[in-house]
Length: 436
Ligand SMILES: NC(=O)C1=CN([C@@H]2O[C@H](COP(=O)(O)OP(=O)(O)OC[C@H]3O[C@@H](n4cnc5c(N)ncnc54)[C@H](O)[C@@H]3O)[C@@H](O)[C@H]2O)C=CC1
Ligand SMILES: N[C@@H](CC=O)C(=O)O
Ligand code: NA
Image (cartoon, rainbow, N blue to C red; front, side):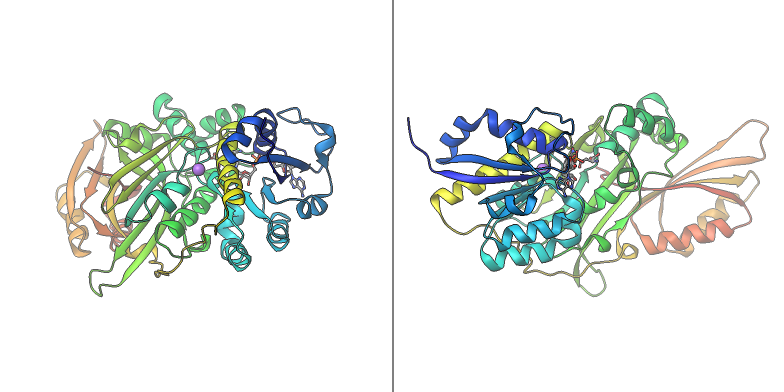
């Protein structure tokens, strides 16, 4: 029997993810010791309530309400409390006391990332966070290590399980957003307050993290353009389905070059978009996540799997823990954040994409010509136009698909359309992404 040295690990938070991390550490201690060459000693689990019911049964003697004492007694701290404070203060304290840190806290990283990375780099500590984006799916490490020699051009991700479940349910059953959300809540996918999910905040935090790593640029969450799914209607989902598309909430991180100045920059944005059903992202069902990466040399790559869930996310936390623990055994520096490029952020008006616009118009001669004129006036080129007239109605529905256009040109086009006397209403404007 090999006598391994011990590496002391302190766990902050024993909720859905934390309780599963503790259980796996306790159950697989021997195997992990062999893989690492040292024993992970779980020295304590900081909780708010010693008697709370938990997803996994944990030894009472490990529970403590004194997180500060636990931090200073640990070589590696795992933060799984969530939220900004006291998580930020505790992570800084752990780093200052010489510990490495593993966290799954995307809100913390998207808001205070640069401060935490700088603190870690200053003392040579490792801060790892595979669980923070797309749960169990390995995406941070592939971007940072496997693709370190390549140039990433674009990331298209479904990174919020709750909204994907809702949109998938609307697509497959015709349910309204409210009904699909109620089902997501019943099944335990949505948060008690689902605003972070359906408002796109959670996806925007993940987009900020992905863009920062992919483009070696510090991207604050405030620079991510965010639109949630709250105004997506059953009608839009049904029209998309009939046209061979599916509505998905996408996080898009893109390297862009201004065609006029040649300036290079980054766009990070979250919005619901039409995706062709045959695109790999179009087939992502239920609460799953997927991240589609386009790299210059590697070409398109797809990472797919469970983006949430206690035990699934615990797998990513343990992966980070094992990697850090191995470094304790073999020595050497950790991986610092790479922000050498510091590309400027391009605002949403500068991005180009395709659009599908649905208009209710008067059914009278010359309407199509007047509508086409509005598009031409703003330099937006129409790719296809479909007209439907309901029997006996004096109105017609026009669905217009555009070629690539800038957001600013599209916004001006839509504003002009809304004011045009032949337009009864602009029923829907959705971007089209991933067209192949
Ligand atoms: N649940 C999931 O599927 C995923 C969660 N994450 C992230 O992992 C982290 C943990 O998430 P969950 O386990 O789902 O959250 P949770 O709400 O189930 O658990 C958090 C636990 O931390 C405890 N806590 C909060 N403040 C504390 C304090 N000051 N001292 C001690 N304990 C404290 C809470 O009482 C709770 O038991 C979050 O940052 C979340 O965003 C990331 C990916 C997926
Ligand atoms: N609420 C999130 C949980 C994981 O990050 C989601 O639905 O994806
Ligand atoms: Na992940």
